[in-house]
Image 1 (spheres, rainbow, N blue to C red):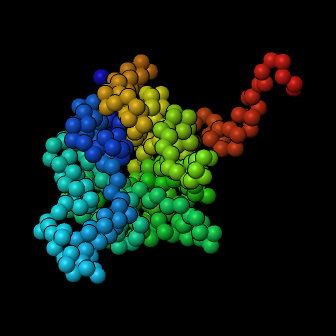
Image 2 (image 1 turned 180 degrees about the vertical axis):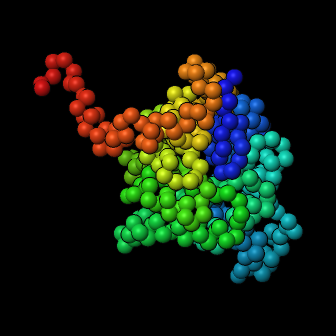
Image 3 (image 1 turned 180 degrees about the horizontal axis):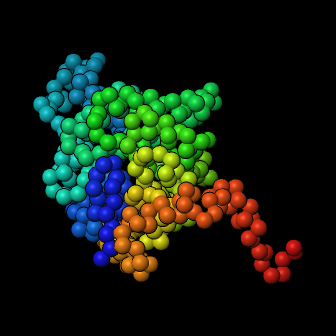
Length: 337
């Protein structure tokens, strides 16, 4: 049996397979199934500040504004002494997972305001999370906002939160930065302990019948993993951060490629939603078999061995790859050349 252990955010993990934020963490039974299937840690579904504020406004209208203009309605809806809100339910689920599972629990937070990030980050820490992933899902839709301002938004958030939260923090980033490597180094300097590459920005769909913009969810494919693999290969050895990949990891081949270029862990989501928690066990066993067949004693032994730092042809991760790919295309027979 190969040694599959790895380190992530200062946590000792038994293997590099970590289910990412998904509906599977909302249910204790499915979370237990993931642990039984060899998940080494679990990222909870995200706590959304927008959802907290929306629920708060609804409750305020329902419980506290029912008599506006209609005094006789003052007791129509009795105000409960206690009620469980969205934030309470999230924190209760975090505490439940911590008490029932034997693997680290990483909370995921998606905030919108500076006060919100701090308030909910502190609440998550008090509830017992082992680490915190900041899911900064931000679309720079303001034409007046520069790339420097976008990056400053992340840096300022992290710097402020580090003054209030001692948990190890991982920044979940999108690929839409002009200079990801430089930006990630700045995140390290601001106090991040890890990064997760890359968040999948779900794209809105246009309904041609109603002419409405509607949400549309597409699960990932293994092709998406290549973008993550490339940037981890470029990043490995240049920062002192835990490196995670997320988006497009479905098979043992995807996982091994990520480890070879330097990832500490691989997040899994779409494949588990499609095939169920037990698919994690299959990938775990396949990973052990691959290491043994290729005579690796441990994950640590192969980690980063074909990153840009150690690759035989490091230029293949840069512009050379673009040219080689174009030159490698061969038109089908019978086509004009």
